[in-house]
Amino acid sequence: MGAACACTTPTGAKGETLTFTRASSGTCLKGATTAGIANGDMVTCTSNQPRVMSGGAGPLGLLVEESRTNTFLRSNEFDNPAWTKLGQGGAATPTVTADQAVCPDGTTTADEVAFGATTAVQRSVLYQVSTFSGAGSTSVFVKSKTTGDTFDVCTTAATCTSCTHVAGSWTLCKSQNGIAISAGTTPFIGNASSDNGGVARNAQTVYLCAAQYEAGSFSSSYIATAGSAVTRAIENASFAVASGVVNTSGSFAATVVAEDSLGGGGGLAAFTPSNRPLYAQSLTARMYDSTTVIQTTGGAGWLLPHRFWSNWSASTMSVNNATDALSASGAFDGDMMGGSTTMEVGCGTSGSGPLNGIIKQVCLDPSPTRCQ
Image (cartoon, rainbow, N blue to C red):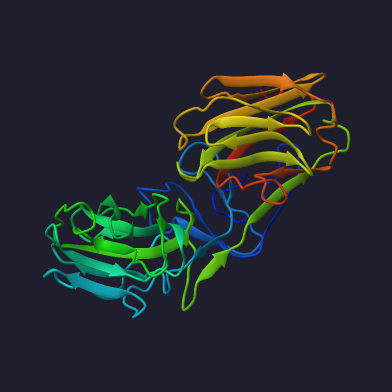
C-alpha cells in the first residue's frame, strides 16, 4: 500500500491496478484519528488522489467517503468576523489570537482561544449560524495550551458533547447525535454550560484548528473553507476483473475500519450493475446476487477493525462477519456474479452507499475458500 497519506494509488499484491477518482481534494490522517494526533499528521491529497491510511489501527487501507460539505466559513480562522465570540450570562467573551501554534497539517495557523469560566447558566463560546436543516455534525481539532481540561462541542443548543483535550497532542472533538435541526440554529465550540446540562467549565486557553459543520449524523474528514462553503466529492474506486473468472464461483474478503459508529457502513464490493459479493451495514454482513439477499445478525464494536468474507459456488452462497463469528447462507442463482469486468471497492460509483470508512486487506479469488 505504500506509505500512509502518500496520495499515490496502491497496487495489489499481484500488480492489480486500482482505478480511483474524486473530483476534489481530501484530507488524510497518517496515524491516530481521534486523540494523540501529531503536528503534520494531516495531509491534503488533491483531486483523484486516494487517501491511504490505517484509521489508527492495523495495516493501511483505502478511505472511501460520501460527498460532504463544510458549511463553517473561514474554518481555520477563528479570529475572522465569520465567527461570533459570545460571552453570555455574565461569562467572559472568548478572545482569539491568530496563528500561535502548529496545526495537524503542519502549518503555523492554530489560533489561541481563551474561553471564560462558566456556571450552569452561562456560555463562553464561538459559533456560526447554520445554513441547512436536518441532521448535523460539528467537529474541531483542539490542543490545550498548558493544562488539559474539558470543553463542549455542540451541534446546536442542548445537543453538546464534552471533550477532554491535552497539551501534548491534538484531539478531534465531535458532536454528532443525528438530531434534526433547523436552519438558523447555532453550533457552539467552547464552554457551553447552559447547553451541556449545566456542567460548569473552567476558564481555559486552547489552540483550535480545522472546524467543520456538515449535514449528516456523523463527522467526516476535514474540508478546509475560506469565504464560502466547500464540498468534498464522492470517491470511486474499482479494479478490473477478467471476464468469467468469478462468474459462478469465488470468494471475497476485506477488513473494515468504520469512520464512526454512526456511519452505518456501505458496500465493500460490487460487480456492476446489481451483484454485490459483500456489504456491511454496521456489523450486519450482507450478500446479493440478482435474486437473493442473505445477511447475518448484527455484531458489536463497529469502530474496531472487522474482517468480513463471502463465497459463492454451485447453488450456495454464504456471508460472514468473521470477527464476531456470525454467518448466513442461502441459495445462489448462478447468474454470473462477476459478469461485469469491473469490481467496485467501497461502492462509490454505481453501488449503493459509500463505505464511509477504510477498507483494507482485500481479497478476490475464483476459489470459494481461498479468501476466507
